Image 1 (cartoon, rainbow, N blue to C red):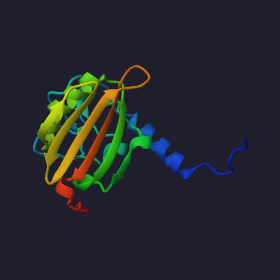
Image 2 (image 1 turned 90 degrees about the vertical axis):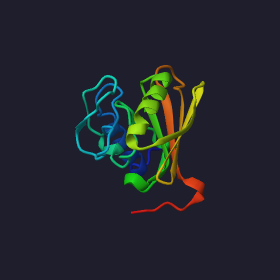
Image 3 (image 1 turned 120 degrees about the vertical axis):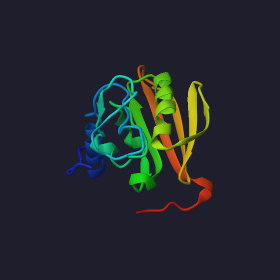
Image 4 (image 1 turned 90 degrees about the horizontal axis):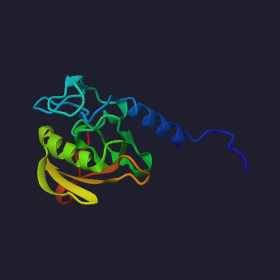
Length: 168
């Protein structure tokens, strides 16, 4: 088998995003603090388990309206996102070393501080949480990682009722 002459640019970009995501701190702190002022600046993460401060990794700056646990990495094979800021939609795949029960509790606790209203949630071997905010629906699927420790988290954001998303 011969090696290609030029590296695949998509593979380089995906690797860069994954490495940037791995640069986060420890614990389950969200990517931004909860509360009324939601920005991507460094803030104290009150009430979160295991961290005093949470600064979003560059790879997650596109998603200021959702909490991202520290040490989470973006799974580019399960990610397809359009837009950014608070108007993005698509699917964001995360891999984390935190257990699936910890991830369920994390999102249940943190999402309301980001303005999301719970629609329903089911804790099961494959847990599902559903939230709504500003004409968008967030569905979170959490399952144990296939190779031991950690969990796979899939966040899917779509316009409510099939409305076309507003892009900046």
